[in-house]
Length: 334
Image (cartoon, rainbow, N blue to C red; front, side, top):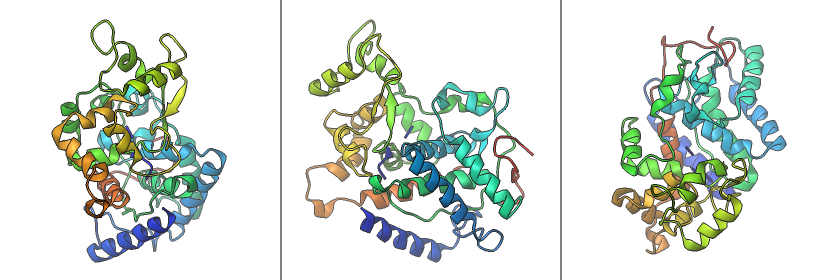
């Protein structure tokens, strides 16, 4: 799924606010807490940050990929690293996880952490921290910084069928809302997490139905701005190369901002699930609260709200305490 152009001054203010909130709360989401490894592996977050930094310098697109990996991990069995397992009929084999990247970067971080403090830092926490770091380190994105509560443990189950209930590009808005509600996420969370598509790309493969077969037999999605429809058809012609990639946030793919929501409002949403956010009254109200025509004075704080939603998502179904395990290798169970 994925929003996400998540301004450097703004980012640091978010860091301060997040730190203050979590210092007051102490614990977030069960036994998760900020600074969980401060005594057992004090360099853990620095090590992960360093590995992510190297990866982003080599390939800036990895920022959006790592954010998407975190989302896909959390939405199946909870944020437990189950999407990382490589075996026959493992979760990562699901078509709903098609195009996921960043696995080797997670493994590289794990290798260094096992040298520094063996059996201490979970793969699930590496995924959550890498998603945060990737947005900050890809400087063009001006992504927000935020505190990540840690203490997740890795799951011992990974089945391809478990990913069947992932939100899909052709789902109705009601189906998508139900899938988010089942994970304890609201319409506001749905809009904000979808806004992660402010960075990243998609392939023409995912647009074929929307451009050429939206109605039975033929036709395009009438919600697409006519000017944009011609643009999309030129980039993704019928029977053309379905692997051609295009930005999810038209004309603003290198900034983490609310332009993705403006595009959705104006008929420039690229994929169906984004466009459908403006078809439903409840999600449309959320979109308009950020990019409507009211005075800027009354608009909510997009980047700050996004960080709240992604931290909330990162607590879905977490395993803590004696549940689960700490894998030695992220791609296989102990």
